Image 1 (tube, rainbow, N blue to C red):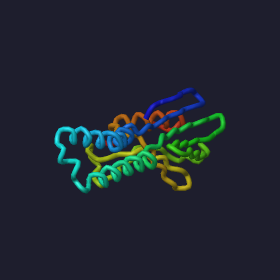
Image 2 (cartoon, rainbow, N blue to C red):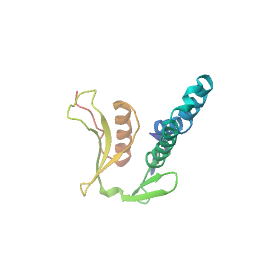
Image 3 (cartoon, helix red, strand yellow):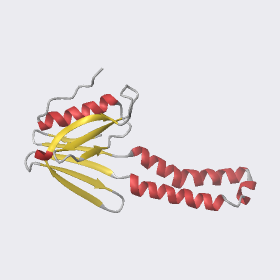
Image 4 (cartoon, rainbow, N blue to C red):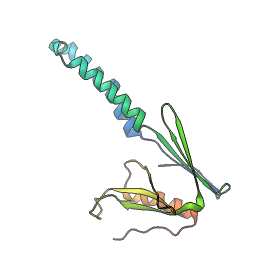
Length: 166
């Protein structure tokens, strides 16, 4: 999660899924290149009947992964308009969702596992007054970095900072 803008009336955060982009690039370009290089050394690889099917399916899977999971998320908290803009920019379309800041009930780091220890997986959750939970992607960051992001948003919204129970 990257801070794009932080002023007294504006807070703009952005998440870019670099890991998904790298994985898609490896699937679409890296694995076919590896098979081409291997076929130069070991010519028998060319005669495998399943190789063209594997390469096509590999490329299709990499492109599907890029289209559906490679979206850039931008969270724009704006006190001037009393709104939260969530922009999901994908390869082919951009989706913008608007929520009033007054509808935000809570923002916190939540555990997604039954075990509440330091090794548990945590996510950033935005809870609205209607009871709807919005998960904010933060990538593969540590618990401490997620807590800093949550406390930055809480400070901007005038909510006391969250502390984790030891």
